[in-house]
Image (cartoon, rainbow, N blue to C red; front, side, top):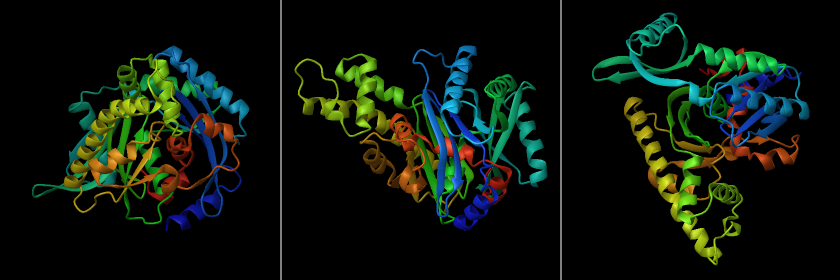
Length: 378
């Protein structure tokens, strides 16, 4: 079914009308554009740019840094058109699970907005959206599980203004869960398959459970690459910048070549690094296990069969082992779960930012009204 829909979508946009997907991460800006290549999506243009290490987490200086990075990407890439779909940074979006009485879709938005104003005390200075996760049982009652999203209107306006200043035409401002779910669905041949996506970034991690592009569960965890780097720096008694180098080298299975302190042997250093990383990854895996437990109780009979690890931190060699021990999920890499053709992209792009870090950008690039209708994405 997915393959048939992808073919329809690919033919509909065969002249390069799909938008540019732009992912604003904590440390990188990534932009990608795709086209259907007969049996999978092909990346026709892509670019990544590291943000300055001293860039603040938010504010005008960060917007300026993001704009400069994006302009550089656009100027050096082979992007077609100016339509863009992007997502707000995770730091400015609030998420809240709600359970409402069953109601027609036409009434759901009004109810969600009322809940946001009444229970969460969000005023008119916030924009509210939601994912309809589906019907659940609460005792003897049937309820509607809804994931509410809220962001300051000022943050959205500043984000849109920044895109326009870069010469782009915003087609939609999406949310990270929707982009990841859309990406995950694009590689599934089974419409009923439930997938868990762990998106491990620098500032935190996203846990998503979805089925056929529908967001069923989402949680933002404050555990990510920075905690791993801090743990290595403390364990090895080295500067944080050196710990960052070690993390990057572990991505290529080259931890034995990491910078050493004094006369410490390479094997001993590699073991010390693993000892530092394992507790952080174990805490992360336990949090994922709690997410699975909540989802299993909420949506009985729909436990994920597949776990997909994405994000810049997904390449740590210990991560699959620790996750498998804690969750008992069959794990797949991003490339195995959703095969993508990167042959038209300069290898230097993936050398700077590995393929595991691109699912959000690719999911944003797939966001169109036509794609929305075909895949049933939220």
